[in-house]
Image (cartoon, rainbow, N blue to C red; front, side):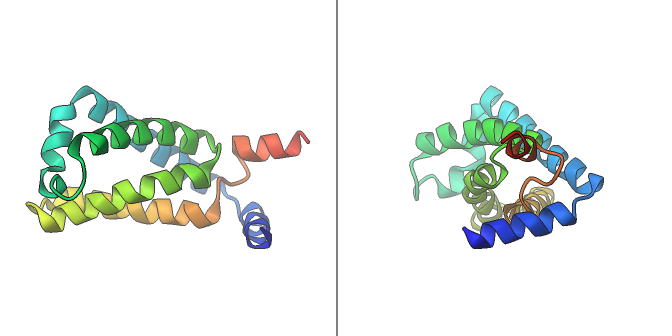
Length: 140
């Protein structure tokens, strides 16, 4: 718990608007991908075809779309950001691995790596000063 408090103090001392905009953009991107996956589950099934034998295909579809949809909203607003990012990490690691196990799509690989690294950054950084988390903490 002490580590999280020290990370929050550091993050609040080094908060800048571009980082908040990056968090909102990441959340919006994940939200849009969640909507895209919900509307086109056949595309999602095609994407996870290389690892379908390793995990339950339909269970994975029912995890990916809502996790992106709800997690994207939470990240964009800065509410429970670290928890929402933790829910995204298995999906994003799987997205990177799919490019190596299945057919390589360079654009998808680069996009997956950038989003994964951004999520790892916000896992340590937190939601920042301009977020719902900070607002709720100040209301105490």
